[in-house]
Length: 101
Length: 412
Image 1: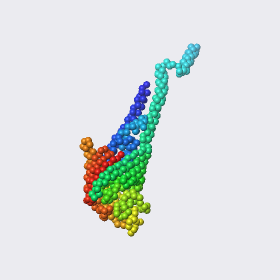
Image 2: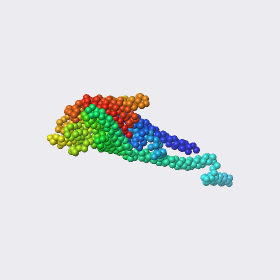
Image 3: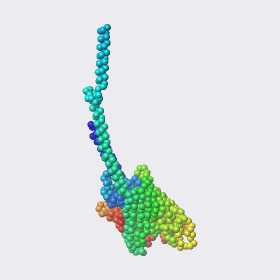
Image 4: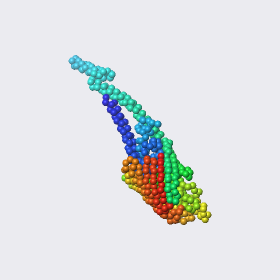
């Protein structure tokens, strides 16, 4: 008789665990992106205000800076993840929440 | 005998009776309610197992729906995220207003504006175009396309800043240069080894080199069209890249830069390039402009960051043939320091004092100059990260070059 609640509980825990892992990865990437941003932007010029542009614009600019600062693709993605945290409307933060356009 | 027979018959009847009873018990129907408690429990267990299987099927069916929904939502989210990077574009640029006061020349005011267009197709391709607009007209600063899908390499083709040393590529924009529109000595417009920062037409592969212990490296390998002399009348034989030349037969320039960052605050780079020169001298008919002229150049750059202070320097050496075929040599270097006073409070944190010393030496006079020393002192003020005003003084061993410059630059 305890099979059903136990199964439901296990499934819920698994889903919660998956969601937490995904959120942790995203936050970890953004945190590492902040470090890459701080280390590289100021090497040549004043670091721009991360909130000054939207997520879509930062994509092109981060690629531009990937080229000039010789960043790896992974670091460029991290920087972009960091910059997008300032653009709350542009990218859904978790699966199932559509982006505001 | 009769007694014996009756005993046998009674025994047979008893056995037959027992056999009927046993047969009757064996033939009892299964559906009939069991009177045996063990049988009842067994039947109850069977029924429960059937119910559990039914419940399991029901749970599985119930859980299947949110699982599918989550997968679908994740896919939508992925597509949304991809949509954010699809066909993105951005506008940027830099503008300057500059007041120059120079000995024997007087005061001049100039303005220029360099719009930059950035287009990316997803994260696979990047296109950059920059125009240079000033009082002399509009020219193409750079226009290149890059393939950016590789983890540690970018393939770039078109007209791009020459990755020889670091000034042309990284530091030449006025909002980046600590002395705004005034290039460091090896790139000085009047007497530098190059007449300005350089852009070149060609192909390059560049990227990062992952290294252990927080160190990293970077590399550039490039092949670009051959340079020309800065003038066609023998007055300025410094080399210029990116000019349209008619010497299609001339072999291209090949070069590379290798950078090493033992820690994030330190970078040391070494560059080299060599090739032929397009000889378009027309002023002197005795010069054979079909003969190949060659050059090779070498550069070392270094920079160190401590909090908001930066020290950087660069050494450039050039060996090239002049239009007559004679080899000439030039070398130059600069050392520059700047410190944004971020430790101060409020508006005072916008100040940034700067200093630069440099020298250029050459084996022959070129463009009227041979050996020049220079000391530059200035102060920048950042209204924001994008708007800066600079007041600078430039003192030269050739005093006619001395200048005081007031510049405001903005980027967006």
